[in-house]
Image (cartoon, rainbow, N blue to C red):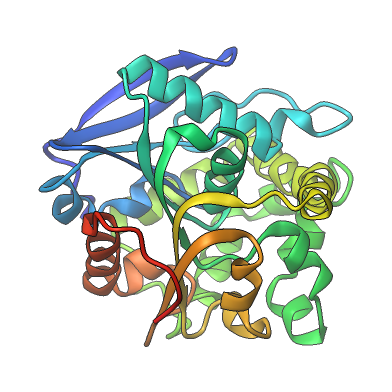
Length: 305
């Protein structure tokens, strides 16, 4: 079941849209950013443990869950990670937090590292879960990655091709996609309420259009912005902890920790064994422990485990 019983659900108007978020716990703020094809419910298994030490904020990103789903634009800037990072700044302003710890998974991790690059003074620590940077991921494609990450090219196709294909059988698309990315190739890691929320948003045309727009932004605008930052030598200044799964996408990439080392001045990392892409739901105790160890360490660290 989704463990957000002690959390308040709020609506935040920022950057021209309304965002839905859950807020709960006490202590320093910790922002939890979800990925595709999920929403803030993906943090439900580990939220209770995290909220004992932190004020946890788990929003639905624009286009997902109960947040607004604005139309895309020709340049795909509406769903660029830079625009989503501005949404995050607005959430912090609304809640009165100047600086925050962030944990981001999948697309949420891409928003998180873009926020750290564009708003460096507002991030105390950054945990990246199971992604490598967008530009690097595209540049490192091989046959194995192309097969497992087929959705990167499928969702980025011009509208309305992927939208129409998904909406023809949305439940099957969601079920097959998320099961195929788990270690056991199964839906068993997902509680019924969370799974239904993932399915239900894929039944909505505006949400499916938004998810496709998210990937169109990744294929074009986000990739270009990442590459420009690499050429300028921009790096993330706060401590970064990279957590990847034994059977997820980064594990198929040669030296994923080395890729992040080029982006972070202060990097640590660890692999979660026995997990596929959905670390928080497949291995919740290990995921919560990794985050609590990292965020609870007040001293700056370097190197890798």
